[in-house]
Length: 260
Image: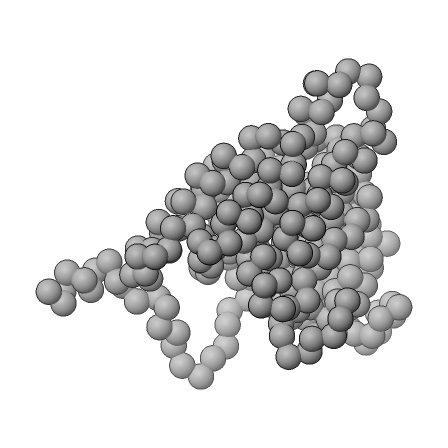
C-alpha cells in the first residue's frame, strides 16, 4: 500500500463477505476517491450462514467450493470499489473468537495504522456473528495502544471507531442509534454495481437501495440539504472532543417554519 500520511487511513473489518459493501460501500468508495488508504478485512466469507442460494441451487457442492465462490465475489466487489481486501478464512456461524484471533485483529490495526475503523454494531440478535466481531474489534482497538502486547507491528493510537448498520430491516431490535450520516448520493451507483457482484446473495442490492433511500431521507431532513438522496448511517463508539459545537445538527425541519 502506498504511503499517504496526510490522508486518513480507513480500515473496515467485517464478519462476512458482503458486509463491507452492503453497509459501508458508499463510504469506502468516497475515501478511495479522495486518495485515502483503504483496507477491507474479511474474517469469514459467510460460507455456512450467508450462502443459502448457493447451497440450494447446487446440491452436492462442497464447503471449499462455496468458500471460493464467496471469496471471488468479495474480490470483484472490492476491485469495483478500488479497495484493498484481505481474508482471514475463519469459518462463520459460529464465528467465535479466542486470544489468537484477538491478537490477529490487533495486528491488522497496528499494521494499517488506521485512523478510522468501521465494523459491526455490538447488538445484533438476528446475526450473533456480528456481535462476536464487534466485541473483539472494540477490544482490539484498545489493545493496539498497549506497549506490553507485542506483535509484529508497533503499538498505535486507537482508531476512531464507528459501527455500521446491524441486520436490516430490524435495527429497532438492536439499539442502533446512528449519530453520523454520510451522503453517498454521488457514489451510490458504484456501490450498487459492486454489491451486484454478490450473486450468492441476490436480495442485497434491492434491500440496501431501500435502506439507503431511508437513511438519505433522514439525512436530508436533518441537514436541510435537498440534494441528498442516499446515505449510510453510523454510530460513533466514543464521544468526539472539539473546541466548539458542530453545526451539522441544526434543526432545519423546525427552523424552516420559524424563519418564514
